[in-house]
Image 1: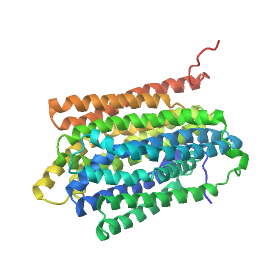
Image 2: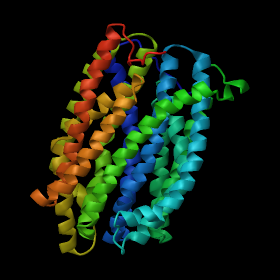
Image 3: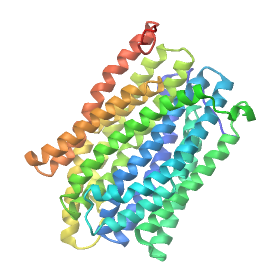
Image 4: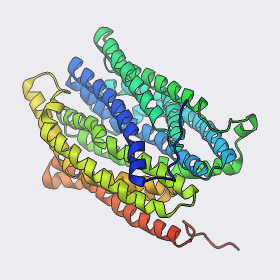
Length: 457
C-alpha cells in the first residue's frame, strides 16, 4: 500500500532529506532517460540530429513548465489540507486538481500542435535542423495529456509525503524508455521521432503507476459528491497554479530568446549548447528534489499552525542544498569533458569544436551551482506557504536578466556571454526570493496575515 508522511513532527533536516532522496533518485532516472535519448540520437543519427533536439529544448520546456507549475500549485492546497487533517477538504482538493488538470491537458495539446511550427520559425531555427525539431515536438506535444496526468498524480502523492512512488514510476519509465530508444532508433531507424515516441510511451507507464498508488492511499475514500468542483475551490486552485505556470512560462520565454541567439551562432554551437543543457537537468536534480521537499514540509507545517518549524526547516534545507551543490560541481568540473564526449560522434574537428563549447558552458554553471540550489529552496518554501506571486515575480526578474544579458554580453565577451547570462539570471531571481521569504516568515511569527489585505468598503 502507498504510504503518506506527516512532516509536522520530527527533526526538519531528517524529514527534508529522507523525503528528498527518493525524489533525487527518481529525477536521476528521468534525466537518465533524457540523456540516453540524446546519446542515442547524437551517436546514431549525428550532430545535426543533436542540434535538432537542442532547438526543440526550450519550447519543450515551456510546455513542461506550464504543466509542472499548474500541478505544483494544486499540490499546495493539498499539502495544507493534509497538514490540517481536513479530510473532506483534502479529497475535494484532489478531485478538483485532477479535473482542472484534465481540461488543461486537452487545451494544451491543441494549442501546441497549432503553434509549434510558427514558434520554431520565430526562433530562427536553422533550415537543416528544422524538420527534425518539428517532428520531435509534434510527437511530444501529442502526449501532453499523459504528461499532465503523471504530474498531477505525482504532485498529489508528494503533497501527502509520498516520494517513493514517483521514484518507482521513474525507474520503470527509464527502463522502458531506454529499451524503446534502442529499438526505435537503432533497429527501426525512426531517428529523432523514435526517441520522442519512446519518451511518450515511458510517460504512460509512469502515469499508470502513480494512479495505482493514489487508489491505494490510506486516506478517507473519495465519494461521488466530492467530484463536484465548486467555484470557490476552482478559483483557489487556479490562483495557486496559474502564477506558477506563468512563472515557468516566462522563464521559458527568456530561454527561447537565448535559444534564438544560440541558433544564430551556427549548428556546431547549438550542438555544444545542447549537450550541456542535457546535463543541466542532472546538475539540477538535487535542487528540484530539495525544492519539492521544502514545499511539502512548509505547506504541512503551515497547515498545522507550526510556524516555528518553517524557519528551522529553511536553515536545514539550505545547508544540505549548498553542500550537495559543491559535491556535484566538483564532479562535473573534474569529469565534464569525458561525460560530454558521450553525446558526440562524427568528424573529429567538428566534435572538438562542439566539446569546447559544451565544456565552457558546463564549467561556468558548475562554479556557481550553489546559487541555483538556494534559488530552488527559497522559491519552493514560499510556494509551500501559498505564496505563488513572489515566485512569479522572481520568474519575471529571471527572464529580464536572461534576455538583457544574452543580448548585450556576447558583444562584450563573445560567445561566453550566453553562458554568463544564465548565471546572472539566477542571481536576479534569488535576490527577490530571499528577501521576501524572511518578510513572510516574520509576519507569520508575529501572528499577522501572510498577505496584506485590501480594505473593504
